[in-house]
Amino acid sequence: MSTITTHILDSALGKPAAGVPVRLEQLTPSARILAEGKTDDDGRIKDLGPEGLEAGNYRLTFDIETYSAATQQTYFYPSVAITFTVAGAAGEHYHVPLLMSPFAYSTYRGS
Image (cartoon, rainbow, N blue to C red):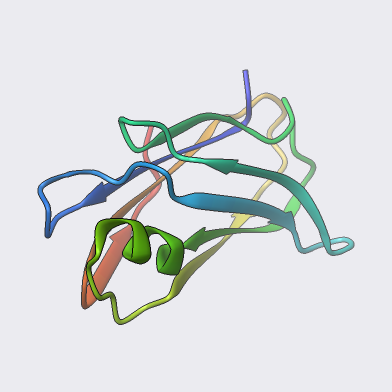
């Protein structure tokens, strides 16, 4: 099972955000792209990245501009970047949901 999963809900449309491109990057100790994917019809990516992550800082970047074009909506934020820290507990799972609307977004560490 992937260490990182995500779920995007579009509160303006009241449904999951399908087809959103998402990139996972490791920022420390060295910057590199670890994985890329797109949300499924339920707005989820259940398998993004490796089975384990070393301690450090990571970033998930959501391509909202692509989603905006597909849904013919206007969003103020063309992308959303969420930076988070992995403390290094082996085998720990990180679920990073995104709740978005045309002029706002929020996130939290899910389960």
